[in-house]
Each structure stands twice: as structure tokens, then as C-alpha cells.
Image (cartoon, one colour):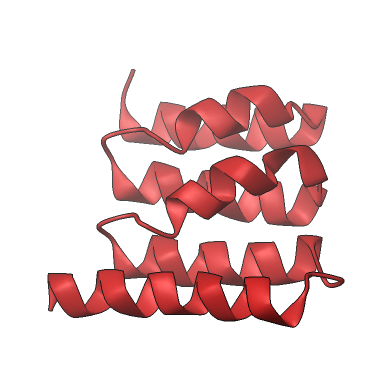
Length: 99
């Protein structure tokens, strides 16, 4: 399956609101597929994705991490300030380690 086929798959999963399948794609080897999956989960807004998205804050790709932070913010607007602070700190630490 080529990248464009995978991007089409992400769009189809988004249209079906298949949160579980999109969560699985958060671990795909290609960062663009991970990013597209985060964006799809953000647009769906499912709280079922929160735990997996938190793990994506550790992604090696900075665009994936940024998109993930936005997704978490939009999905969990009621997140406690301390929890959000810790998520932000985790992202900064990961960025500092990756340069």
C-alpha cells in the first residue's frame, strides 16, 4: 500500500469515524500518516483517543507533536491546568532531546 493509498485510507476512516483504526495509525512508520491520523482524530473529537494522543506527544516528528497538542487541547478543553502543564512540559522535553 503506497502513501497516497494510506492517505486515502485515513480519509475514509475519518469519514467513518473509525477512531480505533485511526489510533492504530498513530504508530505508522511514515510521519505524514501519523500527522494525518492525529488531524482526523482531532476533527472527530473523540475522547477515546486521548490516551493514545498523549503518547503521540513523544513522537519524533515535531509536526506530529504540535498537531497532537492542538488535538488534545480541542478534545479536552476542560483538562486540568496542571495536567496541561505536564503535557506541555513533556512536549518541550522531547523537542529539546531531538534538537
